[in-house]
Amino acid sequence: MQLLRRQFEIIQEHALKEMPYECCGLLAGVRQPDHKGDYENVVYEIAPCANVLYSGKEHGFEISFSEYIDVEREAASLGYGIVGSYHSHIGSVAVPSNSDIDFAKPGHSMIIISIKNMQPAAVTSWYRREEGGFHQEPIQVIE
Ligand SMILES: [Zn+2]
Image (cartoon, rainbow, N blue to C red; front, side, top):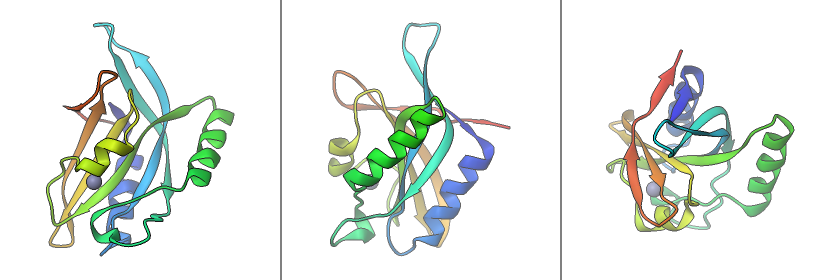
């Protein structure tokens, strides 16, 4: 996946700002076919969202359906689609949890920012395959 430098910084700033809760947001951009016939998500805009999980926001997140629809509409007006999401993990590794697997849509990328000792310790991205499951994908930060 590809992500602009500024957006890469904003998601980490968002993660720190929401402490001790998980932050969350959506990624808008395009699905671009690569030379192998697979798709790569290219992110041009990010939309920080409210974590509306009723309880347990320290280790979970939920984006409301209405906010998702609003972001999707705004992205479409720019010629983009939603290509994934991002959220933070507080004090745990940047690997998807079971509820993360349920949230991710096929073809989407899920970025996870791991926060340890009040600092971003790792940022990873996970591609949700059409046939189920994730594989980790490199994050290419564009200057
Ligand atoms: Zn998670």
